[in-house]
Image (cartoon, each protein chain N blue to C red):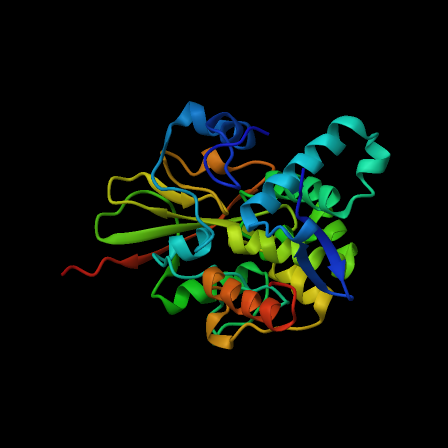
Length: 157
Length: 147
């Protein structure tokens, strides 16, 4: 694979090869790559830790939530932040929405957060943050499919 | 021509050896090692290159990074076959991993914990890659892996 500026960097072509629908549906790279946080943290608007409930106790995980790589544990973790399951990914002006992806065995793989313009923002593992127009553009062999949409009221300042 | 040579001393420690009493800096050592690795890469058959632990580590690291850099799951990142082969290298991989961590903080903690059976990461640093890196580098210095 081609290399970009960073140690883990894929070239744009390689990102599009990994996620073939991205180019067609449209996306923008919005940050440099970093290992400081991952998509699960980014969906929760956190950038200070890598969230994951691994059995080796390496990732950050809310201590109140079972440390299991299951969709239930992820729903509970986001529930702590005020998110509840909702029916669809349509933009609602008074709500933040997130989407959780799972693989074919039901394990969570990825999370994305909806922006106020209706687009979605995702952190691609150790790579960059991107904005993408559709949730389906990241579906496929790597992240699987969207399993759950959650929302919480936007707190107006 | 005088080169600094990285060699094992005792069971763990790696130190620059000064040839003919000429002190050689870290940069020169790096250049020498890269030169040596490039020469070996060009001249040696693949089977013998693989026998060089540093070459093996760098090859596996590149494969692992390319295959997992877009993943969030620490478990998936660590279960990658190249990563597992690095773990399989055992203690000989520790200096390479710590050197890599020093340059690029990343997900080497599963490997270090597996190989050493230790966990120097403070509970409050869990998930914070830069702080976890500092904890492991401190451990590396204490254990004599980092000079």
